[in-house]
Image (tube, rainbow, N blue to C red):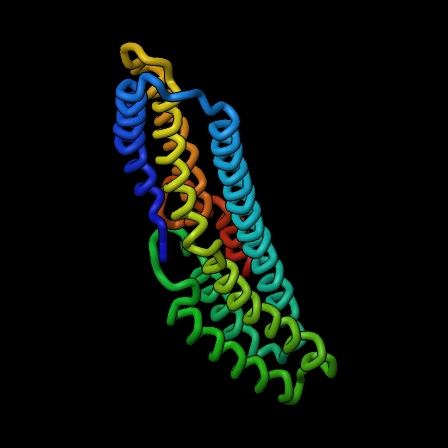
Length: 244
């Protein structure tokens, strides 16, 4: 299940209502005793949950960026080793590499498959042309030893990136994040001393939690919110421009 980052904004009105509900429950129970230890435990658990989910999301986001850089390096290495092939086979393969590099760009501009049909077709074509050329007369004796493993790495990294992109925490972690957000708001309203509602306090708490949860989901699902990985395409753009 995908938790769209904008779903975090549902927390804001929900937390405002729960804060007010907690305050009204407390006002009706004038004999209620303070439970500072329980409140501290709940808020502490909520803080740990926010910290761990945020840290995990950032870690996976950084991993995506490293894999993108690794893919650019793999493509560049394989492209350089085309020099081992016969001269007549190189122009077609170089054009195929330029097309392939372009197909691996802009993956984070819109929701879609990590490996597009165009990419899969180009992978098959490049592999077929390269294996044929590597064993043809005029090829460097080391072509099969150096070029084919480089091509294999270039193709394998796409599957690695796809698996990493769809690797997220269990859904229960995000559901728990939403439940704890609402529960903490209810507890915060209940723990407030009897008196008129402090809207600055309520809005500030709800806004802080909402923006934090939104950022977590935005980093966790970089195709769906404001945070994208498309700026990392510069490595692929530079690589493609260097392919003469």
